[in-house]
Image (cartoon, rainbow, N blue to C red; front, side, top):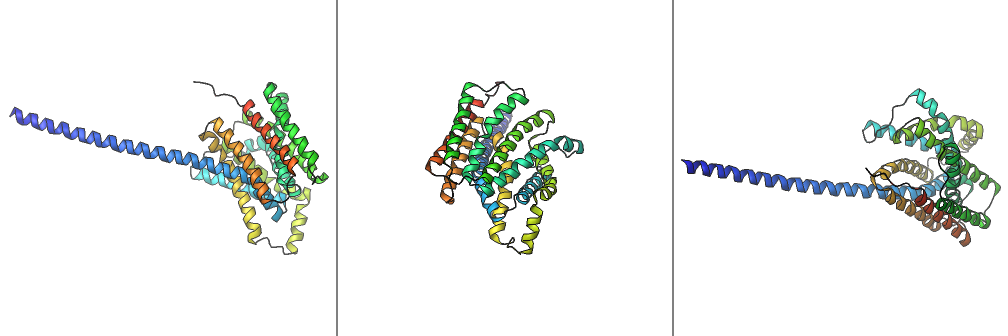
Length: 339
């Protein structure tokens, strides 16, 4: 009788071992599969951000050439980005702050500056080539560094940061002196873009520190309030008259040659917003490397696609600006605190 009991207990023990071993195998396979999907998702986010960031300015240039209404183009971009965030929040893909009238009122100055920065961006691309845009975009940190010190009570930049800013400034001077397509209109918009972007960077940082919006709340409020400012821009800049005139002329707005670049411009603008996911998913060093790749891809694609770009010396000045930007990122990045 005791032997029968022992045999039964042995069979139960063996059965438990088999079940445990099977569960461990299933868990191992599940963990491996999930790890693979997480890694693939990470590479997908990084590749998508890299592609979007490197092509955005070139696509915007293409769009504003085919659809020469900077205010209307930026309004379409605002609408796409705001709608994209709202839908993503609805489907629980992202989390954003709820819309609140008091917060919208407090955020209004930031939205106005954001609107001006993107509007001058489109005007600059309309009147100048992509090289000029990249140079002036690269020069923004010079003014941001000073603005953060004066208005946000940040410490003055270190010697390494000043050297990187001097490199950017030197490259900018080389580019401007060799730009044979220099026009007063183009450089007036370039200066307006430089000023508005510098103020935008500093003021947005102030808004983030005081109002307390999360990442997607910031994207939503920025784009939605900027969209509400569009009718005012139509009246002030006279773009409405131009649009009415072109409607009477029956220009081919509905052709694929216009719809495609405008649609891509809006979609890539929305995709850039999802770059925040990329920033969270990878390390600061990895994100910096991605930024370097983006800049060089933009220059290479620009040189291949367009025939209207800077001469060799101007391109060297452009690359010096980008090198200064890389050095600036490295010198101004703060190491993460250890837990």
